[in-house]
View 1 (cartoon, rainbow, N blue to C red):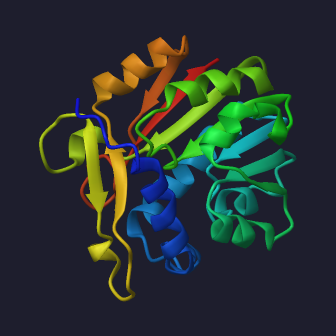
View 2 (view 1 turned 180 degrees about the horizontal axis):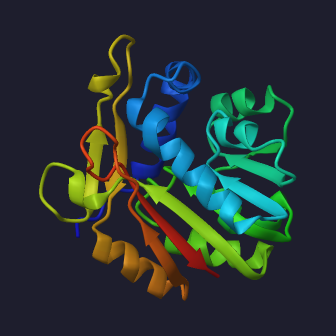
Length: 225
């Protein structure tokens, strides 16, 4: 396991701020095929299967998930550390959207309220250090609450199968000047070790498949607090 430098998280947020307009267009115009065919529906189905009353969208981005489930009787709160993306998410008026990065959430978890019976992290856990975040979330969830994590499937990515910092150039996104994004890759074993360290219980593991190749598009972990 390779540790990132201290500026890793700040560079991650800076890249998302720089890429906010391009990312918003990519999501809203359906430019990411795996999301359109597989991963959007997979996380929606996992959420609806749990039937939450109040849910926290952790790293909500431009707000597509909240918008897509706005009529399902769920009280949503979105948390986003990138101001430009948080502003995009507020445009729909479907939920309270707070501009908070994870460090601020760890320091003051009750700033986003409480009483959540579901926390959703949809491709939003890219930081190197997540244990404090998981421990902080315990303070704002109800007994029996669930955490749903959708992430890139560790076994389908190129490169050494070792946890550590990586970078995303967004070259596959086509047009536009994207800023390279640093992110932290975790092996499946390290994901499970992280959950154990946070005293979280893995309830199920789902591997949504791409219809054209029948290869995993993502990994969804259902976890109990």
